[in-house]
Image (cartoon, rainbow, N blue to C red):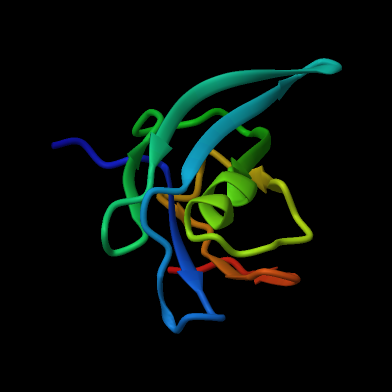
Length: 113
């Protein structure tokens, strides 16, 4: 199994558990438009381990999480139908881990390891 340059992990802080089955898309900004490079779904541990290529070019990227569908499946009202995280990638860095801490009415993120 190859390693992706970008990985993610979604934790549902409202329930205190990993957020399983959340759709995730990895996009790259190409001029003025976004181009989808890869899509995936979080596993039972809330992780997407293979999302896109092993190496990305330096540029601006975005992870978009289908949080509305995730909460709808659990019967939970949410304020955010999706969460989009935009970040810069340098091809000289070996890996980017971008976690999402999620609750129905708030979220936070950071650059993980």
